[in-house]
Image 1 (cartoon, rainbow, N blue to C red):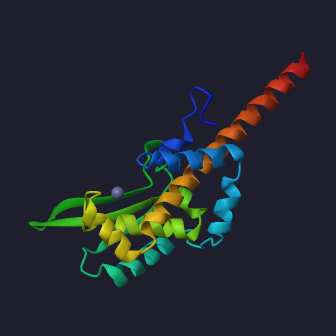
Image 2 (cartoon, rainbow, N blue to C red):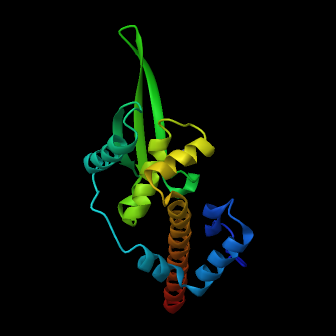
Length: 192
Ligand SMILES: [Zn+2]
């Protein structure tokens, strides 16, 4: 599917940059074979009901309470529809510093891409754990990933499978738009 990828359509494999070539080959083969959707659905059958910003805040606060009690308090947690895969941004953590009454106060905020509303429960957990880890570690270094694994021992597998899920979702969308384009071409021709 990567060969002959239509110009103007981004390669879904872009979500998997940094993984070893033999792993990428397997994912690519499964994309072409069309088996990835079933594979992911079997492996991650569990959905979640966290659909509102309030629910997401509570969900995030619960994980923080369990594993990161000493990290700075969270001021805001929410879904963000503007965060999408276009910028490779799945989540965002921000610390807004404001001077209040002569004191510098940092407000910590976590935003999660809205696409996770419909994703398997484990993938939402992965992104929340990732953003929570950023409360303590800003870089994607060893200390950061240790913290992620402390909160979620399956972290690395989940991050990989989330990326596979994004690649699959992207390829499905591209395929759907190709079908739509073909359909409209057909109807135009029939009008002639
Ligand atoms: Zn990060």
